[in-house]
Amino acid sequence: ADVDFRVEGDTDANLLFVNAGTDRIGIGTDSPTSPLEISHASNPVIKVTSTSSSVGAGFFAQGGSSNDSQFGLSSGTTAKYTFLRDGSQSDDLRIYDSANALDIIRYRHGSYLHFGVNGSERMRINSSGHVGIGSTSPSYRLSVEAASGTDVTALFKSDDANAWIQIRDNTTTDTGVMVGANGDNLLLRAGSN
Image 1 (tube, rainbow, N blue to C red):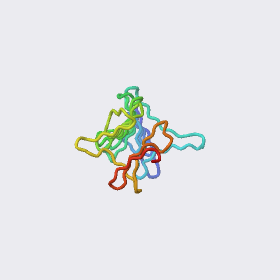
Image 2 (image 1 turned 180 degrees about the horizontal axis):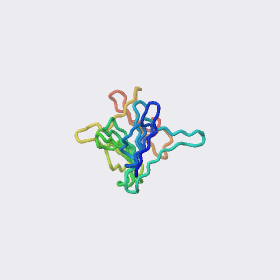
Image 3 (image 1 turned 30 degrees about the vertical axis):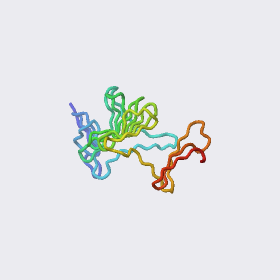
Image 4 (image 1 turned 90 degrees about the horizontal axis):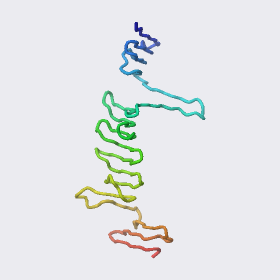
C-alpha cells in the first residue's frame, strides 16, 4: 500500500511531504502538483552553493531530443517569460515573452540570432555576420530598412560642431573619405583635405 511521509518543522507542518499515491514531493506543501514543488510564504528560494573556489555550481534541465527544456518566470499564476531550448525548432535557444507571444531573443543554431521588441523582430544577425535592422535577410554587413512612409532611415548625431561618417578600405592610410555635417552644411572630405 502507498504510505505518505511527512516531516514537520517548528513553524511548518509540511516541511517535507512525500505523497506516495502521486509520486510527488512537497516542501512547504502537502499537495504538490509537480514531481517536486517548493512553497514558502516569505523565502521561496532554491540555492546551490559551491564551497570551493575551483568548482562551479550548476542547474541542468534535460528534455527529450524533440521536446523543450524550459525555465519559466511568472507573476502569480500568469506566465510572463520563458527561457527555453526549443527541441521542435532545430534546438533554438529562446528567451520568450509568454504574455505577448513573441521572442525577445532567439538563436537558431548555425543560422541566425534575432531580437524582438513590441511584438515583432527588430534586428537579426545571420550566420555570415550580417546585421539587419528592420530586415530579416541582410545581404550586407549592415542593412537598415525602414517601413514604408519613413523617409529617414538612420540618424548619426554628434555633440561636437561637426559630425562625420568615415569610409575606409584596406589601403587607406589617411583619414579616409568622410561625409559630414556642420550645422545645415554638407561636408565632404578625402584624406586630410
